[in-house]
Image 1 (cartoon, one colour):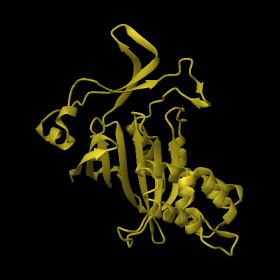
Image 2: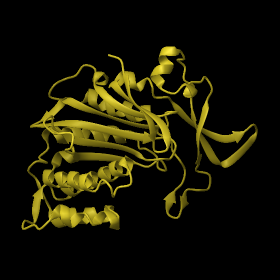
Image 3: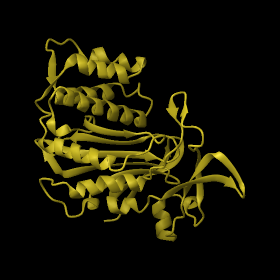
Length: 314
């Protein structure tokens, strides 16, 4: 089955295309990138590096149509973004400054390696044959891909993966896992389950993505997140710590009056879904929303670990 172009327009201020098709076909559209010294001839800026898109090696009418933008097809290397390197700039106002490139393919390789290795209830011989939807900016610097894992099913839930990354400093690397139901309508929101968040001014630890995916998959299949309980007050503290004052105005309406001191982890995950659904106009964009969800679900997971529940979270 070939991939098809569903939409073409602007995404985060860049021309972009949305594709649908088997993951293995969509991945062929994702370029590779390198990070190197920022220079013109022999003139070097010692404080800067540049992110470079490597040449697209397949050029032809059919491939050009599939790529979506003819001007993006070239055997030349294309500069994408100037970034700060580590030269005498480890910390500025308490933040690390040196940019660390994490390629889209590196992220996907780790995700699929763990999915292929993990023992799911129903084995899939080729995980990348699954159908996905992918949004890709004109030079490939920004990527957003999501797909269902039909062989990861528990009760009425199917696990859904959403992954996005940029190599031009626009947004961080984020992996979000959701609980999806076939019976849900388009208006209903998937329930956030777990998340991974990485900013490009830090080194990505070897195996970090695979470790996250392994634990999340095991917890989805065997964890007790449907019944284990967490304190309401602790959950509310997580919300207040990670939301802006403008976003916090949603909390009283979402939580409402409560008589119990505790609720199940699944109940809190459902509350997060309601929060981001009702506050869709408050969160600046989809990328900010996914980042917030990754942080909040991670902190909820850590809270469950502290309280002695969710042993498979560790």
